[in-house]
Length: 97
Image (cartoon, rainbow, N blue to C red; front, side, top):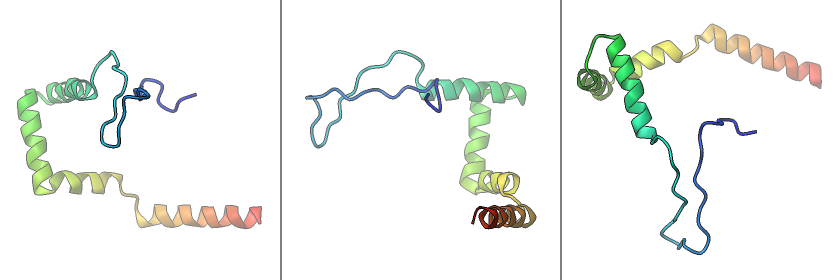
């Protein structure tokens, strides 16, 4: 069972590929970039902004490094969490061995 059932990877077409060119089957459906635009538009609307305003704000945050700092602050575990996890892993390894 695939890990991501809604994602399909096109198959290569045998005999049409060269060392520098890969020919793959054409897939029907929504392009990833188009689906991302739809999601960005929803996020922008939730913030009361147009898609263009939202994109400009995100680009400004990205270029300034603010977007990275926000993500790092939000998603980086604390030292306590890391140490607790490491202790748990060590304990499990000791029990197994």
